[in-house]
Each structure stands twice: as structure tokens, then as C-alpha cells.
Image (tube, rainbow, N blue to C red; front, top):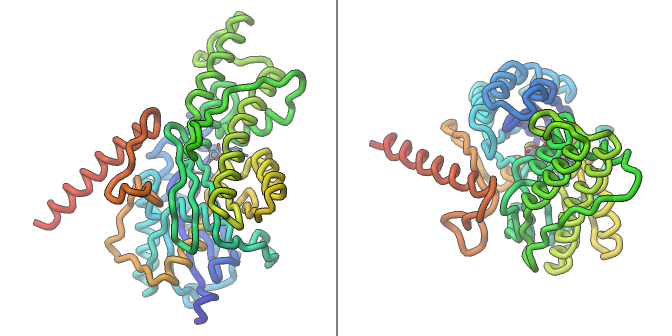
Length: 396
Ligand code: KG4
Ligand code: ZN
């Protein structure tokens, strides 16, 4: 085995996609399968954890069969099994972890636990095409923006697996903001792609919604924007004598399109401006974008223009590798494998696993001030306290 051509079987089940992939050298996707649960969660407008976990249980074996068949290889050729160990929904993570452990144990393969957010970042190191097409590789130093349904943060990387947190959301994640705005506008789940599609049809005078710049900081905030959109939608619904959004009131399509465009422009503006400024200030040679919101065409286009103007390289994975997939777990798993990391068969799910802690806070996160991030922080603290209690109970 040449280390550069390590063959990794990767498993991802942290949220609502059941995915398996075979990745060569952390770069070439030999085969992959993604069973999406979007249709399953659409009626509830969001992921119901137990429903998601049961669907992973149902689809994980067919996803493995499909990925191996597409790659045209058997277990004998594999070098390791990589699996998402967190962050994510505990029940969903446990399905993938138990499955990956079983495979590693039966086939005598090393196991590598991967952080889902590191996977989103390392999607930028994957070749974008299935036909062996080679993409540009990020050149260090890198500034990376990860924008997903649960996380939004900016990091600087001087080398592989080395992160310095520059900023993060103080309330909602960008994807979460898109999803909430989608619900408010009566659009289907998930809100991100639905808002992008609705915005394309926008004509007439644009609506300018607020942007939270938060001074010179690289932190983000989207809750004020969400409230501004809520106020506008409620006022326009009332003027049309329609019921409020939470009772099913929906604006005419043309207004939905204009408001979707205004919302998207506000999110894209702040994400792109802060990322490009971070790249300039840290002397980055490449900007990397990852996470589900990186599939957004307006954001991709805006960063493409800004990077050319600034003379900085830009690597954004194709949209299918921005949203949850297992190939990205194979890419990050490859790096961790090369670094000598191995998980034991006691690997556990880490639902609140941070990729990187703020500087000067090695033992804990800087508490977010308010909103979803503050609630998530409290939940993480409670979970960590629970984990510690379990560990000490186990060692008696
Ligand atoms: O990374 P991801 O697939 O799952 C998480 O790890 O959270 O991200 C899902 C998020 C959802 O909030 C979804 O609305 C958003 O990514 N998203 C988009 C687009 N496609 C997916 N947001 C904006 N524009 C898109 N085209
Ligand atoms: Zn994700």
C-alpha cells in the first residue's frame, strides 16, 4: 500500500443523509452513495431525530452495497474505515458508528473517527469530477468558511489539520437562517435551495434587509435579519388581510421572490465580505468554502468575483460535495489516518464535538451571547457534564 493511495471506506450519518463512499488517497472518489431523507422530513419541515435514526438503520446497508459496487472493489483492498463521530444527532451518529465498528472489526481494518465539520472543510481537497477530473488543490495558508445547517465559522489554516478560529456565529447558523426564512415565506423544506430558487424569479424593486457586521469581528449573526424578515412578512400579510405566517399565511409568489432575494443578498454579502477580509488580513493564498450553504450559487459567484479581484485562489467543491456526503469524511479521514490517528472499538458519538476552540479558551468555548448558539452551548455543557458523569461511573 502506498500511503498516498490509501483506500478508505467512509460512513456518514450525522444528520439526515445516509452516505457511504470509497475514497483513494484522500482525493479520488471511487464510488459513493447518498440516501437522502429530505422527502421523509419535508412534512414536518425539519429533521425529527428518531425518524432520522431509523431511516439510517434502513438505508445504511444498501448505501454500502451501492458505494462498493460503484467503486468496483471488495473489502480486501481497503486500508481503513472512517466514520463521522460528531457533531450531529446522537441517534443518527450511533447508527453509522456502530456500523463502521462492525465492519472494521469483522475485516480487521483500522477505524478512524472523523469530525463532520472537518469533513466539510476537506471536501475542498476532493477531485470534483467522477471521471478522474483533477481539481485545483488549496494552497496554504488557507482561510476556510464552513456554512452548514448547524454551524457557521471561519478558520485560518497554516497546514493540514491546523486550525485557528477567526469567527463564528453568535446565534443561528447560516443554513438554519435559510431554513427559518424558508418556513416564514411558506417555501418547502429545506429552505436554502428553496430560497435560492425563489430568488431567481425576483423582479421589481429589491428589498434591502439588514446586515449584521458586528464591527471588525469575524463573528456572524443572523437572528436580527430573521426578525426583520418576520416583521416585513407579517406586515405585508396583514395588509393583504391574510393570516400570519405561523397560521399558514403565504404572500403572493412575486413578493416571496423579492423577499427571498433580499434575504439571500444579505446573508451572502456578510459571509463573502468577512471571508475575503479574513483572507486579506491573514495573508491567505486560498479561500476554501464548505457546508450545505456553499451550494448556494449567489455565494459561490460573489466569492469567485471577490477572490479574482483580491488575487487569491478559491476552491469550492461542486454542490453535491458541499451538502452532507461520505466522500468528504473519506478525505478528512485520510488526513487523520496519515497522521496516525486510530479510534478504538469503544469509539462513542460526540454530538457537540467542536472542530476548534477559540484562542485562549483551551478548556471550554467562549459562551455565545444569545440565541440558538447560546442554547446549543448550554446543551453541550450539560451533555459534557453527563459524559463526564458516565465516564466516572464507568471507572468505578
Ligand atoms: O452541510 P449540510 O448538508 O448539513 C449540515 O451539516 O447541517 O447543510 C444543510 C444546510 C441546510 O440548512 C440547507 O438549507 C442549506 O444547507 N443549503 C443551502 C443550499 N443548499 C443547501 N442554503 C443556501 N443555498 C443552497 N443552495
Ligand atoms: Zn453537514
